[in-house]
Amino acid sequence: MKTKLIVSACLLGENCKYNGGNNYNSDILKLKTFFELIPVCPEAFGGLEIPREPCEIRERRVYSKSGEDFTSEFERGAEHTLYIAKECNAPVAILKENSPSCGCGKIYDGSFSGRLCDGNGITAQLLLDNDIAVFGDSRVKKLIELYGIYD
Image (cartoon, rainbow, N blue to C red):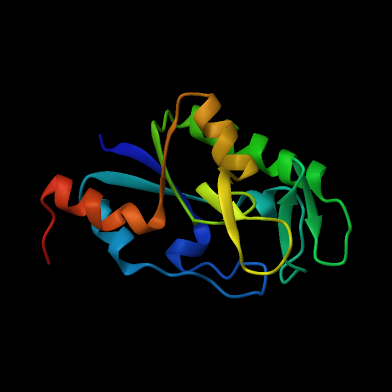
């Protein structure tokens, strides 16, 4: 039985990104050799529309570009994602970097200017707080090397 791996659905080609697109990363599919990929979209789980206005974290709250507070939707989506991770006993997640949900280590600073700051998205932080390892999508190549996966 393969270890379960939580993956941001947008990285698997699902059109759930805020603008209706995706962030497809073909390297993630290479991990199927060792992991069962479990797609999640915390923002969709939280009830946010696709497409939707971009959101960023400011002062520990999540705001849309027009100033509407969507913190509760982001928290609901994070809780749903954690539930899935626990139910399938997934010890690891690969999430979309910089996102107000999934960003790990760096997120947009809340000014909607494209500037990054230190911090984690709502879902990434909740997973980390529950002892689930979180990797940003730029680390996928490192995981591939670690497991010796070659084309």
